[in-house]
Image (cartoon, rainbow, N blue to C red; front, side, top):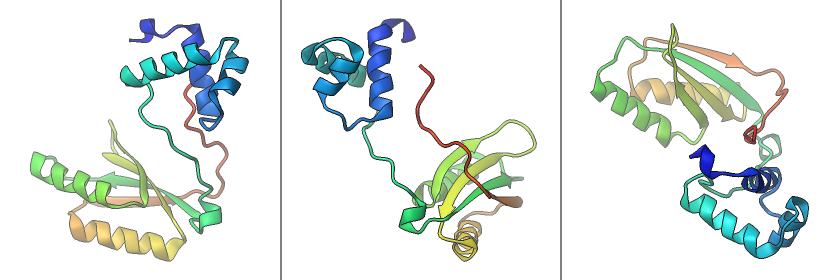
Length: 153
């Protein structure tokens, strides 16, 4: 699919990643084309599934979500039923911003955003009551050095 995306598409995508709230006129001026081709390309990129959604980025600390934990999960359960239950539990928890299944000694890593350690403990207690987990290690992020959703284009 990447061969269907040309340099102009990539410039448009870069602009949208920088600020999806800018007008078509602003994007067109930055990309060096006019409004209608930009609109057509954005529509095409949506239809192709390259653009999955348009959203806003919120400041978690200004919303009282000051603690970011990376949660390492090891499980001794690997059957499909356990995995379905575990994934459903993760999807039901709004604190879980990201969840990844890993290769290696750790089975899953979660990025969890909560107000504080007490809120993390409530999340943890709810998770282990929903599904059996062999081992959980929580790492508190002391400082966020880089956080971006922008893909390298």
